[in-house]
Length: 150
Image (tube, rainbow, N blue to C red; front, side):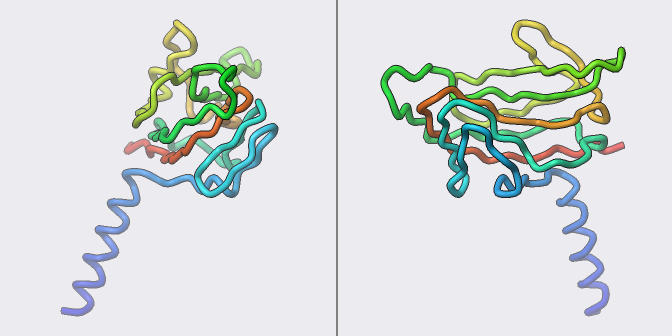
């Protein structure tokens, strides 16, 4: 009975682990942005997620909360999600999605809104993902990777 319980626990943990994978932001690196806990504090720049393969990832769940302008002249957008990838011609490209409202965002690479255009990004071609912010802003961020269930 104990072996069956352990096996069932393992299966459930494995199954739920396949739904989303939290990103440890402390393993990333910032340029013009510092991280305190889950809070990004920006002087204007980017915060790069830890390097990894995104080949088996179909999207990102992003939760943005507690936005604060540290200076009244700071812009109104919260942040941008920047995806650096290699296109079909072998050229490095950057697609950016801006967020103006806090809350939970479910982003799919197959339907990535790059400005006004919706593009498809092959997850295997992604080199890096970064959060970009203008100067004098503070934002709590929680991020999960959504695995592709092939």
